[in-house]
Length: 172
Image (cartoon, rainbow, N blue to C red):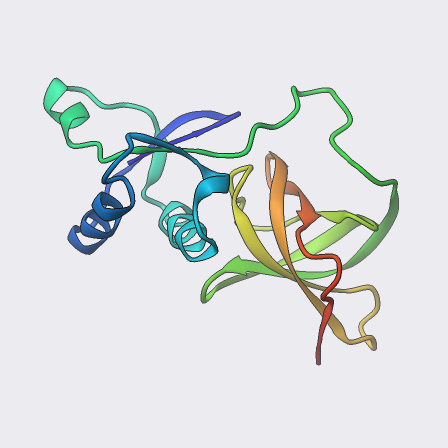
């Protein structure tokens, strides 16, 4: 499977069950934008892409190209250097936990606004991927859990946009 994003074209080597599942998704198309996929399909593809099997494009032979089931096009992002934020952010240090599925990492928040947060951590997800984020502004406060879309990554830093602003889940 190919994954196309503003960071370029990447390739994922798939397991047999993943190939069957993706063959069904791509049965009528060779290229699909991420927004036309169901939430279950987006999360499944995000889980596949979050593993270490995602690498820069590098198919060596025509046979390798023939094995590609389809291409997922991640959200189109603004060009580097443009202000990517839809709302203002305040600089603040706070606790963050984030991940996809059962894969969770601890990070450190650096800025927060109504529409999203910026943070750093050991795992960086590609722009356009949907992740789950928990954060708390102070240690004595409850965790706030939200679904988010990675909008930007640079080194070990990510900027995310909250997806559902109407449903904020508190998690002790």
